[in-house]
Each structure stands twice: as C-alpha cells, then as structure tokens.
Amino acid sequence: MSNTSQKHRNFISEPMGEKPVTELAGIGDVLGKRLEALGFDKAYTVLGQYLILKKDQELFEMWLKDTISANSKQSSDCYRCLTDWCHEFL
Image 1 (tube, helix red, strand yellow):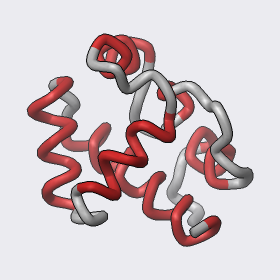
Image 2 (cartoon, rainbow, N blue to C red):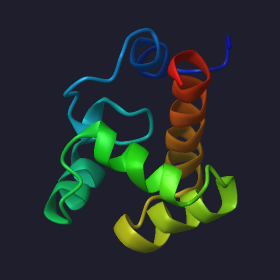
Image 3 (cartoon, rainbow, N blue to C red):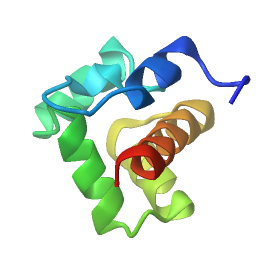
Image 4 (cartoon, rainbow, N blue to C red):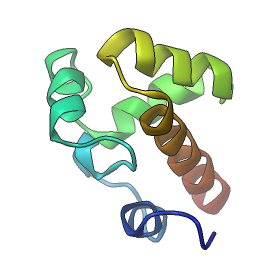
C-alpha cells in the first residue's frame, strides 16, 4: 500500500460514516461538486453505486468518466479506495 495517497490511507483507516464525497481518493472539489449535483453528496452514496456495479473496476471507472468526466487516474484512485475500504470493513 506504499503507493497510495495519504487521502486514500486516511479514508480506509476508519468507518465511512457521514464522510463527504470529497474524502474519497481521486475526488477533489471539482469532481465532488459534480457528484453532489447528481445527488452523490456522501462517500456512502458512491459506495452504493460501486456495489450496484458489482465492484467491477471497468464499469465503475467508466461510470465516473461518463458521469463526472473523471480522468483515468482519478477514477482508478477512487475505485481502489473503495475496494480497499470494502476489504477492511465489509
């Protein structure tokens, strides 16, 4: 896990609770505002979409790219963050 960001490590170190969507690795203020405008204001709502897509990396990353114009790195970072969180807490 040495090549993950501090934001990623912080996110997966504790339960999700009511964390805002911008706490997810790969999701900054701009993408966060785009997600919030679509009703994805909390990290758990993005987790819900991740689970609906059956934790499929290609589908989830494509959803982020198509929905909020995330780039490959941003969508990959977010996917990995949610995957690692699920391994810790689900």
